[in-house]
Length: 488
Image (cartoon, rainbow, N blue to C red; front, side, top):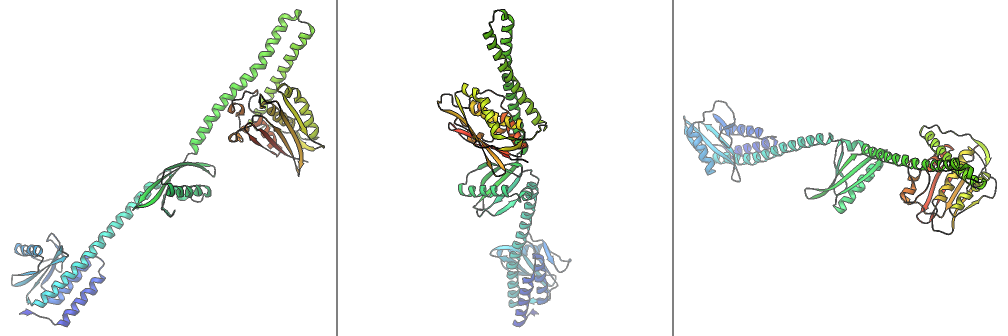
């Protein structure tokens, strides 16, 4: 007897399927809904859904006999994209391909004891079509979900790799928003100076699209920054890699110090050898020709020996002071004295040396300036500054001078030593106070001395709680400033 149904029942089943299919979360739940609806609609013996390779994917019973004839008819239905049916073991077996825009997603097979009429076949055909539409969307969604999971896993994997790097890695988009950063960068993101340089570099790369390499010091650590222009989905981005190069910098610094020490030893050896050679030569001459020397010539020889011995003593004192500085053993013996008188005394003691270089010494102090300090050490500071001013005068200049002045400045005394000598390049303004550094070698200007005078001078000034700095231009001269507290 033909299987019939009312139009109201047809609409009910279709709406039930639409409702159930809309709630389906995955392809398997959709296929289960389809089987239930078909079972209710035509009272089937069994219902099964085959996959694209005609293997059972879902059924309402495990006891399904897929004969060769049935499989051949299913294959024909798929190839022709057309529903069909066969009679087998007294049952009518309905075959409907699940098709979406000529794409086969599976086959619906239902076995019933009744022969369905045309309208029932059309309803099942409609359900098959709707199932194919939803099934394709669910499979696509499922595929996207799996792809998303793969992407997420890949991202986690890549994040773990980048987190294992000792370098900091960060990526910015064209709006300078951070789109990726490893844990090393996130841990240093709170360093204002580093973050400022990184953002400034990223902004420059977005504009220029050219590779940049720079260095920055942040909180006592040196970083090398390499910035590259990259693209993601046709959007310009910036990849920045930051490496801690503090150890490398320290190694370079130690090597530089080692070279300076070698130069220092060579320079000191030369300086010591010069007065010793003079003393030895004049002493030998006097010993071998003592009976032939008149009083005046003997006096001249002794003057030279005395002068060179003083020079030698000065060098040795400088070396001893430097050794004390290295051992943090330099101490002060403070007394109260008139700085103005000490300046006059120093200028007078330096006058002959200045004249030998064609330099005029001047001082500008109009009133007593009492200060509590180590008089011997302050004298050493003044002698050093005046001596440098004379040494670094211009060889061929006619009007060469070194002028020293001092004045009270609140709770301090400010001393200025001005010269119109060769000057000091700006890049050496801080280096002149460093250990073993010689401005003379930097300027290719021959001068006497071990090259540690300003290092000692700076240490003495700072031990007094003061500070020293300079202003200078090449071929125009220099001004050294010393600020000392008045003391008790």
